[in-house]
Length: 171
Image 1 (cartoon, rainbow, N blue to C red):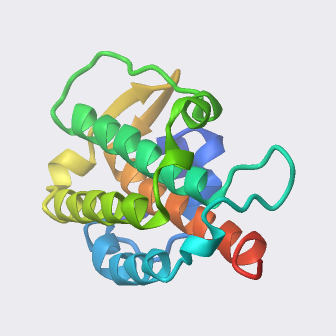
Image 2: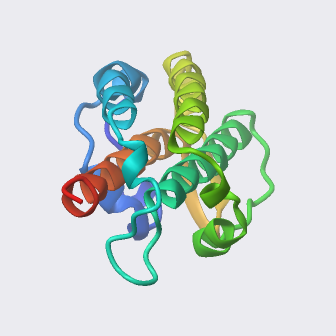
């Protein structure tokens, strides 16, 4: 399997895919898993409620967003590789963030959940076959391949790691 072609997903996701390296989606967990775990384990509880601008998410909300979106993307991946042909709906990440109880949870608690979920995602992706990765489905009104979803999952995390580093870490 190789990197996803632009036609394998909506253009919205091309940025996330572009943040990743490599050709084989089943080695993304080895490539990125340790650095993701290290990065999030190093976040300070003192910054949990910090938002870099009015109306922007706190660090707690960013972590909850990552948890929620990872679950959605992995469900989409499972749906597609199991061959279900029904289209999956989109979701509003801001509505999810506004209804999630992130501000009532410690950063440590959120991070524990996040790292457990990431481990599950890593294990799931490493065992995918070429046949499964080649499958296509519909999500949020657009065609998407299982292969593209693997790269999107890691690219989405890398995107938020960059934002946290640039806008949250120095505060």
